[in-house]
Image 1 (cartoon, rainbow, N blue to C red):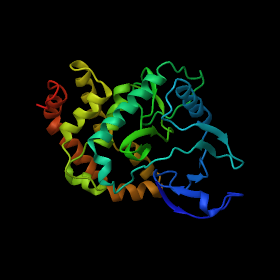
Image 2 (image 1 turned 90 degrees about the horizontal axis):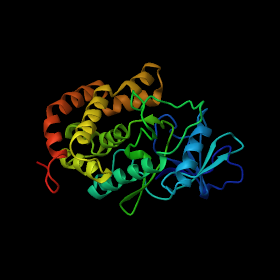
Image 3 (image 1 turned 30 degrees about the vertical axis):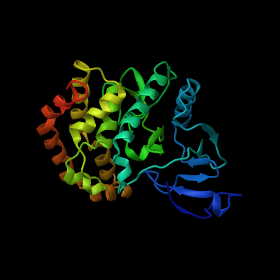
Image 4 (image 1 turned 90 degrees about the vertical axis):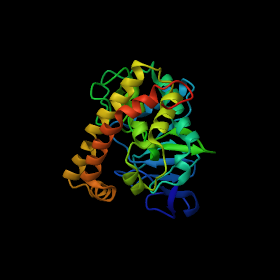
Length: 287
């Protein structure tokens, strides 16, 4: 999905017809562009490390991540553009489709299967802000929000924006996906992002089933990680708000601020037993 076209400074040889500013993201808003069949985005000190990760999973047959192409003459990352739609707030109705939710969970499972044998360089310096606090056995995405999934024909086909990839617990990675995609919100707060009319317990069950979380102890662990993540939630944004980063200040205010965090924490505790019953109900039922 794009938000505007035109000729942009520093894009030599690119006509207005083949340069687009890509929507999504907060920190990099307005600075990620499509040039023909490539995406150009600001590089970081971790770009080469992330490229190594992406090349590994692609070599293992998982093509649902961007193909790294190196760097341009401005030092930006170059990635092969993946055709499709990316939902951004206010989220369109199609982004709540149960089939899309299931395919997103399956896509994450396929990524995890492809990344399990990845051995990071000894000096790997990951951004661990969004990863499981205790690390974990594989390098996960850690930020599978709605804006970081490419969709075609109602199905999730690719994960993008790996800047928070880091060693993590796979069920933590799945819990992050669930928090954003179910979404794990009161309906009042979900409406802020354009979403309503969803059944939280049923949609959380879809996530666990599609990923293949075994019944019993692992479903309990999945829910525990989800609840713990919600109670930790907000630290990432609040740190940037405290530093005065304007994009995050605006997002914080627009999304409901501290009140929304407090409501989410109280709500998840109030529905925890209901969610566990739905997760571990016999197949074909949610309670």
